[in-house]
Amino acid sequence: MWLADIKGDWKGRYLFMPAEAGGRLAITHCCCDYPKVSDVQRLRDQWSNARDRFRDQWASEFGAWPTTSTGKNFPGHHIFDLGHGGPPVAPGNVLPVPSDIHQTFNDEYPACYAPGGKWLTPGLDHPYVD
Image (cartoon, rainbow, N blue to C red; front, side, top):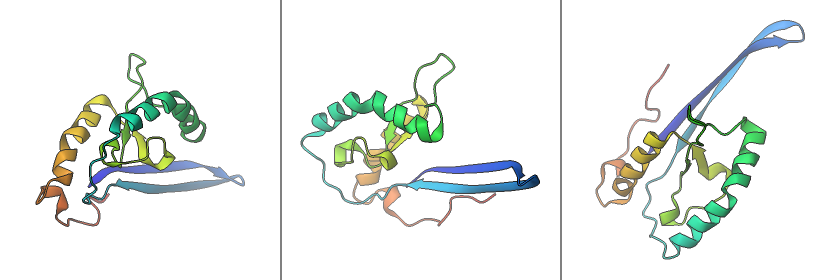
């Protein structure tokens, strides 16, 4: 399942010469048949207890954690979800997303694990191109 395709571009100067660089980061999740975990509340508590520290560490690498226009932090979406044993505070497992997108992800996740679900069929290598 494609969750995000983040494109970064940079234009500036390098050794007094004009320079450009960029790249893409595809964030995907395998809809494998991971079993549900019985201790999901423990994982959620672990995330809740570490959330502020996680956001600070994330901000040191990527800049301030995104917020809404009213200053409310974006939710952290767990790419490998907690209900199926995803690591609560792994740096590569949490992505800030707007609340409405986070709700869409959460609504689609049951289909990801459903037998014969639409997310289990192979698709394109890349969902779109520039």
